[in-house]
Image (tube, rainbow, N blue to C red; front, side, top):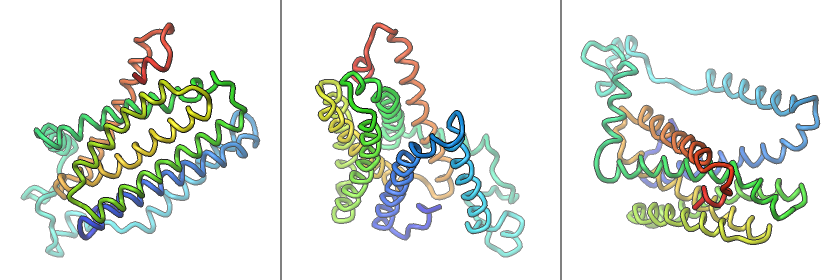
Length: 270
């Protein structure tokens, strides 16, 4: 919805960056609040109750405050039927039709196919790092509070990467393709640096570097995808690419399982 409201490419860049920053702010606030909430009740009851309350609150706000376009019947009556989203008889497209359209879009050669494959690769890298960075860091025997600091600075790094890419692409929108590829390559370099890091400070710095590339790369990727996706299919296409990100995470879990207990986290990151 926010992307659809962007009037031009400059607004699209700012919107993509703002969404990434807000998401990271929420994650960082949750990371800090989670420590205090963990002491309320048993078995993290405070964390779950707070999360449930926030989710229900947002659900109500969304129902009451987010405008929705007219449904097909009212749209026909008002002469505002959205032709690309409805067949000639005015019925909404079925879920199967939306899925077929989205898969057909993702299979397009060139940029779209590369975006789809990189979404899976990014999901692999994100889950591979986020699942195992704490056990890997504990090999350096850090104090307990250091884990919270690293988690917080990781989310702050996503915000920094998002804002840096926003500033660059607002000034030089033609650099979006090169920027995206450089940031994805940087993510690979960051994983290599994480593998060779020695000491908890170096490891934390490598972790932050990875999340700078993840944040910036996510903004560049969203901009390219939204520019390529037809407006009538954007919602289902974005859902498909989000699914590809999660598939990448599942593949990382499966890969770690197949590598076996004799391997370290470094093998997965490599």
